Image (tube, rainbow, N blue to C red; front, side):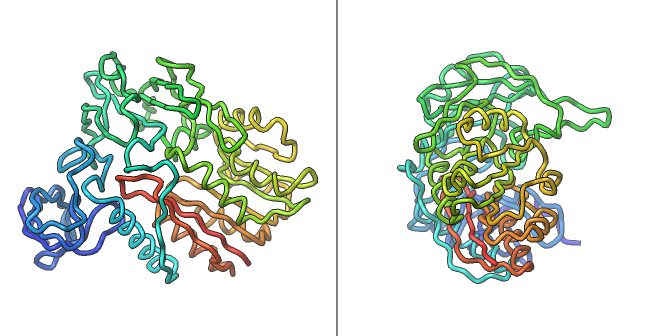
Length: 422
C-alpha cells in the first residue's frame, strides 16, 4: 500500500489533458490528476485527495514554468480550493478547445476503438468565453446563502462571481433569505426576461436517501423522483426560448440548452444529418420539449410521423403546447426504455440526446433492433458518448460524421454529435 500523500506538495511536469478537467502528471510511479495547470507546465501541486492506489488528485498552487497559453484566470472563484465551475478559466479559448479535442479523440480510441481527429468548434454567441450561459442553478448553504459547490465537495462558495452568465443574473440574489438546503434556479431567457425560482430541499426517503435532482435530474427524471416544491421569486417562472421562427414557453426548472447558441446549432445539424424525406418515420428519444422533433417533422412533411419520448411530464406538456400546429409529432411522457416497444415503426431515423450517463446498451440494442437506417446521437460527456458509439458499431453501424462543440466555455465539458448509418 502506497504512502498517503494528502496535503503533500509535489513539483511536477504536466503532460496531456485527461477527461474531467485535469492534466496528467507522474511522480514516484503514481499518476497525479492536476487541476488548474496546462500541458507542458512545471508546477508545485498540493495533493487534495488520496485514497491510495495508483493515483491521487492535486491542485496546481504555484506555476514555475508557465505555458504561453496561460492567462489571468477569468473566474475569480474557481481556483485551487474554490468552486468547481470553471476548470479552464486560466487558459486561452484556443487551448481550452485543443484540450477538449484531445480528450474526445482519446475517449473514442479507448472506448470505441475509433481513431479520429476531432476539432471542437466555437458556438455562436461565445464571444470571449463569458456571458454565454442562459441559466444557472445555485446551491443554498445552511445559513441560507446561495452559491456554487466547491470541486468534489458539498461545501459552497457564496461569492456570486462566476462569469459564465451575465452579471445581471445575480441582481439581488445574495440579499434574499433562502431556505437552507434548497436550490435557486436563475434563467435569462431568449426574450430578455429574468426568472428566479427557489426549489425546495429534496425529500429524504425512509432509507435516508434524497430523491434525484438535475439533468439527468429534475428535468430528465421528474417522472422517477418525487417532485420538489418550487417558489417563483422573480419573473413568471415561464421562460420563453426561440429556435429560428418557433417559440417555447417552458418551466424555469425544465431542461433547455445552457449556451445561448446551442439549440439553434444542434437543431440545424440534426435536421441536416437526419436527411428526412416526405412520409418518413422518426423517433426523437430523450426529446425534451421537442426542439429536434419539429426539425425532423419539417423534413417528414404532413405524411410523415415523429414520436418524441421524454420522461418529464412538464416538458411533454410544454412541447405539446409549442408544437400544437405540427400534428405529425406525437409526444410520449415515459422512460425511453419503456416507451420504445410501443412507438410507430420501423423508424428510418432515430435521434437520441440522453443524459450525461449516455443511452447505454439496452436502449441502443432496441434502436438497432428497430431497424433504423440512420442514427443521430448527441452526447454531453466524452466517455459515455464514446461507449455508446462503440455499442452502435457492434451492431453494424458506421460512424459517418462527428462534430464537437465548445458548448461550455471555461469548463472541461464538451458536446458531441455523431451520425451513424447502417
